Image (cartoon, rainbow over the protein chains, first blue to last red):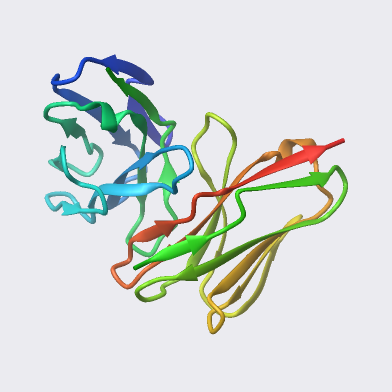
Length: 112
Length: 109
C-alpha cells in the first residue's frame, strides 16, 4: 500500500441498502476526512477524525456514519442509501489538522 | 455564511500564462490551499499560503492578500498536461477546509 486506498472504485446500489466505503492509509497520519464531490459544487466535508478514537461531523453528515478504531482505517457507512447520495466520495488524510491533505482515488457511488 | 468564489471555466493557449482568481469569505482564516484535479482523478496539492505575498514553485505561483480575501494561482509556460480543474480551499477557524467549486482550465494548442 502506498498512500491512501479506497474501495470499491465504483458501486451501483439500490436505494435502502446499507453500504460501507473503505479507506486505508499507510502514512501514519493522525487526521482523516471524508468528502463528497458533486458537479458544480466544491468538495463538501461529511465527517472527519483528528485522531484515532475520535470523530466529528462536517458540513453534510446526515445519512452517514464513521468510525476510527485505529490510525489507518476510516470507513464511511451509509445506513440506508438514498438517490441524493449519488456522488464521488473522496477520503483524505493529513499528518495533523494543519497539514496538507492527501486524497485517495475516490469511490463513484450511484444509488438507484 | 462561508463562501469561496472562483471562475467556472477558463481557456488559455499552450505556452502562455494564466491567472486563476479566488475570493473568499470565511469564519476565520488559517491558510489557503490550491489543488489540481485532473478529470476522473483525485485532487493533488499545489500550494499553500498563510501570509500575504507570493509563493513561487516552479511554473506555478500563488498569491494571497488576507485584507482583500483574495488569492490567485499563476501558471506560466502552459503545457497541455495543465488542462485540469484548479480548486481553491480556505482553512477556517475550526481548521476545516472550505472548498470552491473549482476552475476548469482548458489549454488549446
